[in-house]
Amino acid sequence: MKDIKSMTRQELENDFSELGLPRFRVKQVFSWLHRGVTDFSQMTNLSNDLRAQLAQRYFITAPEIARKQVSQKDGTIKYLWRLGDGNCVESVVMRYHHGNTICISSEVGCPMGCKFCASTLGGLVRRLTASEMLDQVLFAGIDSELEISNIVLMGIGEPLDNLDNVLRFLELVNDPDGLNIGMRHISLSTCGIVPKILELAEKKLQLTLSVSLHSPDDAHRSEIMPVNNRWNVDTLLAACRTYFEKTGRRVSFEYTMIQGVSDSPQQANLLAKKLQGMAAHVNLIPLNRVAESGLKTSTKQAVAAFQQILQEHGVTATVRRTLGSDIDASCGQLRRKYEKEERPCKPGA
Ligand code: SAH
Image (cartoon, protein in one colour):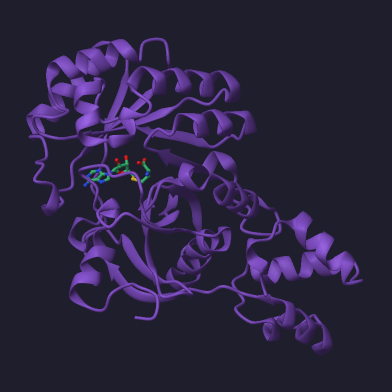
């Protein structure tokens, strides 16, 4: 059995032509899948025979909502999805004035080991398929009845550790007969897997690359992000410059403010210096406390001072608004809580 929703248009065309089906069937089936049908029997413009034939060959993924939390403060919605094999991942729907944005997961768990992040505490369980990424967008839209116009790949997992499936997902979500979400409405966040950044640059997609920097110096960055031991700050920034040259898209940097680790004025100055001439944008993120890490968030004053230094050097910097703070809305927190308190998000549970 094949996962039909993970198949590209081209793959579906090849398969259908092997089955001797006319070309217009591809578009019909594709449109149904991307409207969130969960069974071939719902594809009412296909004959019963064809529905049965397809059901023998393919399966259609559909996650269950294991938990849903709605913020009383700002309407942010957090979904915990139970996937076909029992594993769970999270997505968050945020309402911004420029449109509703969904933050989706790309892996179950994460192999990267960043010290401040709840998603990586149990390591990587497995990578998501393209359909499992698409389903988060599709079913969050259906359940919330909100039109979702923007996607950020900033949930659980490292998208560039799952690049092939992520590229497949991007192609699917971009399709005019599918959700038709333009690349300029999509951001992909990475902790800095340099060869994959360079591979992505070659695709010349118009999405926004966000790089989790969190410190401009190797000593501090290596302390909180093991990936820095493999590709250090200068190597990473060189890849970002290449990305900008190849795609013409300005790279955005995420910078988590951690007391005593990433928030000193010296680091602000060094960061400004290293970003000179890069047309970069820095997003300062107050650390969301994860009990296991022992790390603390910076004071408001430290964040403001850091931002000011960057701006004085001509580097645009914004402070990320915290949405959904009453519903465990940051990365990996709901999945962990659910695992601890209720039933484990594991196959067979
Ligand atoms: N693996 C990707 C995307 C997932 S994390 C990446 O590393 O970019 C999305 C963003 O949230 C990253 O910038 C990450 O560093 C940040 N983040 C993770 N845990 C956090 C926490 N407890 N507080 C603040 N930001 C956090």
